[in-house]
Length: 292
Ligand code: CP
Image 1 (cartoon, protein in one colour):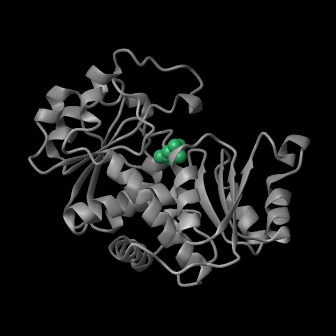
Image 2: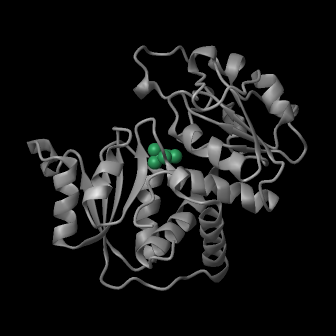
């Protein structure tokens, strides 16, 4: 496998291979270096976690990093993304990590250039490194996926996290259901929608999503959202004893989740971020060593 563009590209065995490599990296604390290799990180949409955890993962693997942004690259002069990627490869990049807004365009580029590409989030499409770190967090917590009940809650329709995680979790054996405002439900992801109260009470994992205002045509009302559709302190009290809270972040405290719950004992939100570095090391290592 040359690229990781979508969770649908990965077989179950390849997912487990990446989770097990992440476990090994975490237990051994170090990993073989990739001397003289350059990673090009192209982030054309904002990012805190993904961009910086890829940077740390690359540096921990001994790679040099080129940081390419939309605002100070020649993309501003009309150069296409294809020509930008081809240029970075031509001057020495061994790997391109790309976040941008057009669903599916990375597949077309990846088919035309030899450099491995990891999709770091494309529009409302896919976010495979987020999905793998989420899977890794669940795997660490429960030791597997079979029979684990996962509630994906929030702005499903505009979420690349929901699109990446739902089907991956189902094929690994989890039972996945959703809770969302009716206008943010998306039948192409699932028709299995419950009320927020039902979902929270049933779940082993409550996976919350941010309202994706930047992808909405009209600004959504946030003020009454928490009470109607979010994880309040009252709802959290009804969660199963060993159930955990997840969120890909950025979190809007007091909107999709009560601010006090972000760092609650059952929250794994910051664990997810930590796991993001490890799983990205595993992904880069597997692609550059052609082990996937
Ligand atoms: N979860 C996530 O993708 O966060 P960033 O947008 O900060 O990268």
